[in-house]
Image 1 (cartoon, rainbow, N blue to C red):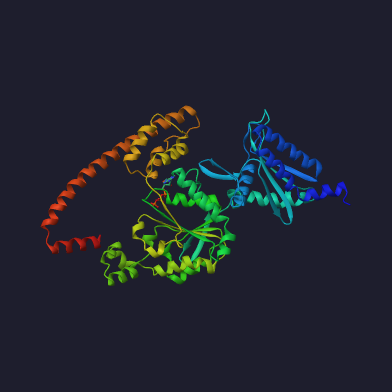
Image 2: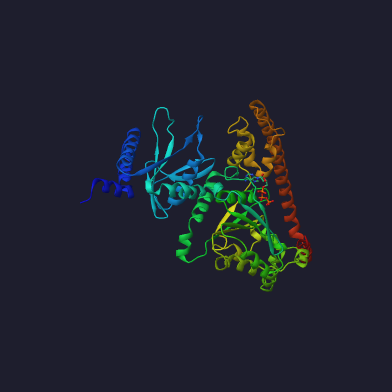
Length: 482
Ligand SMILES: Nc1ncnc2c1ncn2[C@@H]1O[C@H](COP(=O)(O)OP(=O)(O)OP(=O)(O)O)[C@@H](O)[C@H]1O
C-alpha cells in the first residue's frame, strides 16, 4: 500500500500528465477562462507535489520592458522543440522569425537525470498587459542542479549569451590569427525582403540543431551557402548577421595568401566547430586556368574569356579547383562539429558548376538591388521611422532603378546625430529628400543608357551585316585582353 505522501512524492517526479490535462482543458476554453484553469492546475501541482516553480515573464521592470531571460528561454525552447512540437507559434520580432511554443503547451526536458517541465501561457490579470510567460517546474530535490547548471545551460542557448566573445579569424599564409568579432549586423538590421529573411533564419535554425540528423544519414554536419549579387548588396553583412545569429566564430579565408592545396588543408584542419568559413569573391580568388585549358582543348573556346590573359599568367598561388572541392568535401572527414561554408561572388555565372552544385553549396542566395521592403528596414535602422509621406515616391523610384542597399544606406546616414525628436524628424526629411534626388538622377541615367543602348544595337546590327571575318578575330582578341 502506498501512502499519500509517497503518491505525492512520485507525482513530483512526473507531473507531466497533470500539466498536460491542464493545458488540454485550457485549449478548448475561451482565452480568459482557459488561463484561469491553467493557473489553477499549476497551483494544484505546487500544492500536491514537492515541485518548485520558476516564472519567466515576458515583460519585467517598473516600466515594463522585454525580459532578456524570457527571450533566452524562448530561444532555447524554440531550438529544442521546433522539430518535435505539434503546435508552434510563429512571430516576427525585430524583423526576425521567432518560432516558439504556443500558449498552454507543456514541454518536458531532462538535464543530468533531472526531469523538468516548461509550461507556456499568457497572464490575464487586469493590471497585467496580457503578457506571456514560461513557467519551469521541477522536483525540489533538483533545486541546486537546476539553479546552478540547468539555467546556465538554457541561457547559453541565447546566441549572444552563448558565445559573447566570438572570434574573427583571418589567415596569413597557412596560419590563422584572430581578433574579437565585433560586427553588430543582425537579421534585424539586414535590408532584405522579409520572406527571404525568414527562410534563411529557419534554414540556419534547423541546421544548428540537426547534429543527430546528419549523424543518422551518415553525412558531415556542414552546409554550404553561396551568396551572389552585385557589390554593395549586403553579402558580407549577411555573413555577419549569420555569425551573430548562430553565435559562431568566423574564418575569413584569403585564398590568394595560401600557397597550395596542402596549406589549404592544414588551415581547414585548424578551424574549430561552430564556425563559418568564408571565401569572399571566390571567382576572383580561384585560378580556374587548369579547367579553362581543359575546356579549350574540348573546344569550349568561350570559357577562356572568363579570366583575362594577364590575370592567368601572373597568378602567384597554386590552389586549384580540385583543392577547393577537396577542402569542402573533406570538412566531414577531417573535422568534427558543425560548420557553414560560405562563398560570395559578384559573378555567379563565372563559377564552375562542380563547385556550386547542391551538396557542396546547398543554399544559393541572391542578394539584390534595394527594393521598397528592404528600404523600409534601412529607414527604420538609420532614421527610426516606419512611415513618411515621401515613402510612396521612393517606392516608385526604387522600382525603376537598380540602387544597392549600400547606396541607399549612405543617403540615409544623417549628417548630425541627435537624441532630440524634432532634430531626428528634420534629419529624416533631409535624408529622404537627398535620396529622392539621387534616385531621380539614377532614373535619368537609366533612361539615357537605354536610349543609347537602342541606338548602339541598331548600329551593331548594321555593322554586322557589313563585317569581314577578320574583324571578329580582332574583337575577340581585345575581349580576351580586357
Ligand atoms: N542588405 C543590406 N542590409 C543592410 N546594410 C547593407 C545591405 N547591403 C549593404 N549594406 C550596407 O552597405 C555596406 C556594404 O555592404 P556589404 O559589404 O555587405 O556588401 P557586399 O555585397 O558584400 O559588397 P562586395 O560584393 O563589394 O563585397 C555595409 O557595410 C552596410 O552598411
